[in-house]
Length: 617
Image 1 (spheres, rainbow, N blue to C red):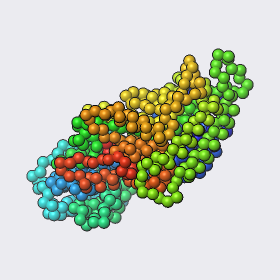
Image 2: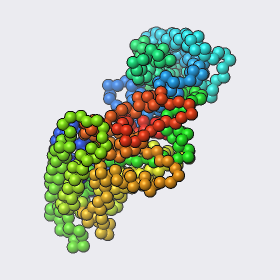
Image 3: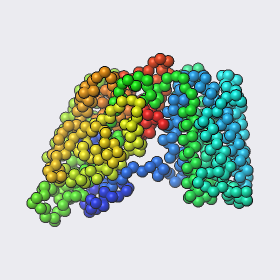
Image 4: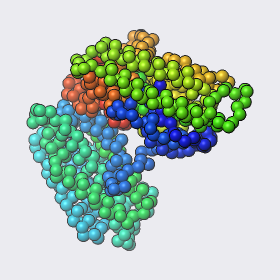
C-alpha cells in the first residue's frame, strides 16, 4: 500500500493528453508505503496535479539557482563527472594514503607538463583581453600556477620524482594540454577562428573560451582537496600525501578557484546564448579530460574501485538486487496507478456499458483514495513508533526481522483494504504500459543498468524486488530503456480482457517477503561460482535485504530507514569514506573483503556514485 496524494478537484484531462506531456509538477515525490521524511502528516493534504510522466531530463537541462553564476552552474551540472574523478583508482589511493610512490612520482612529472601548458594558456588569455581588471586577475592566476610548479619541485626533492625532462608524456596528458593550448589559440572545434584582424570583442571571446576550458581543473582540485582533507584521520600527519592535500584544500587555492570562476562570469557577460553553449561544451570536455588524466596514471597495486575489476570476480558472479519505487524512480508507482484510475474513471453522470467492469465515478474514487491515503499514513507512523526499541541496541539482524513482522502485517492489511475498496478496478493495461514507458527514472539509473548488463568482464545477474502493485508498469519502465533482461519480482494486477479486475496477486508486500525472495534467488544460483551480492534500496522495506547483501547501498534520504536502523544498531556510512577505509586495508595479493550481515550500510547521493563505485568511468 502507498500513501496517496489525491487532488481535491476532479481531473478532466484526457488520458491520451497526460500520457504525452513532457514535464511533471508533482509537489510530492511520491505516495509511497514508507514516509521519506520525519513522521508528519503531509501528502494527503496536498493536491495532486494532472498526471504527466516524462522521460528523465538530461543533466544539461537541470534547473539551477538563478543567483548562481555561469561557472557555478557549469560545476553543478558536472556533479557526475566530479564524482567519477573522485572515484578513480588513482584518486582513491591518493586519498587513502596507500598510493604507490612510483605512481605519485609519475603523476607529478605529468602534472608539471600540464601546469606549464596551463600557465601558457593564461598568458595567451591575457593577451586577448583589454579589460584591466581581467588582466590583473589572469596575471595573478598565472603567478599562482608558477608557485604550484615550485611546489611540485619540492615534491620532486622530497619523493625523488621523475625528471620531467626525461619522463615520457602519456597520451592523456598530451590530449589535455593540446586541448587547452588550441582553445587559447582560438582553435575551438566547430567555431570559426578570430583571424589576424580580430576585433577586441572577438579576442575577448577567445579569452572567455580559454578561461572556460581552464576553470574545471581549478574547481575540481579545490573540491578534491576539501574532500580528502575531511578524510584525514587522527594520525593525519603520517599521511604520505598530506602536503598535496593541504595545498589543494588551503584557503589560498580555494580563493584561486573562486577567482577564476568570477573571471569566467565577467568575461561571459556580453556573450550570446550560442557562445555560452560553446563555453559549456569546453567546460564539460575539460572535466572529461581530467578524469582521463587520472585514469592514465599507472597503478601497480590492487584497488577497491571499480568493483567489477576485482580479480576474485573473474571466476565468480556479481548479483545485483534493486528496489524500484524511489530507488529507480522519482515518483512512486502507486501515484501513477492512482492517477490512471482517477483520470479514466467515469464521471458521475456517465452511463456505463453493461460490458464494462463496474467502476465508481471519478469524484467518489478520488474521495476513496484520499481516505485510504490518510489512514495509511496515520497507521504507518504509529507502526514505526511501535517497533522502535526504547533504547539503542547492538546490531542484531534477527531482532530487527522480528520487529518488522509488525510492519509486514500492517502492509498486508493495507493492501487488502485497497483491493476491497475497488479503486484499482478498470485500469486499461495499455494505459499502464504507456505510463510506465514515460515514467521518470532517477538520473543515471538507466545508463548504469545498461552498462552493467553489457559488461563482458564478469558474469552478472540483475533482480528488481518491489512492492509495486503492477509488474507491467515496472517492465514497461525498463523496456523503454532497452532493459528487458532485468528480472522483476513484484505483485501483479489481474486482468479481464485488458482491464484490471481490482484484484492483486500478492507476491511482495513486506520487508519479510523481500528477504525471502532474496534468499530464494540466491539458492537457485547455487553452483561452482561464488555470488557477490549488492542490494540498492531507499526505505525501511529494503532494510533486511540491504543487510543480507554483501554490499548494501542506500540511496536517498529516508529518515524512517535511518531512524529504525540506527536504533537496532545498523551503521550508515558514506560510501566514499567507507571505500577509503577499505583501500587502506587492501594489500598485495588479496581481494577486497565484503561480507553481508555486518550491520554496515553504505549511503550514496546518486546513481552516478553507484556507477563510479561498481563500474567506473
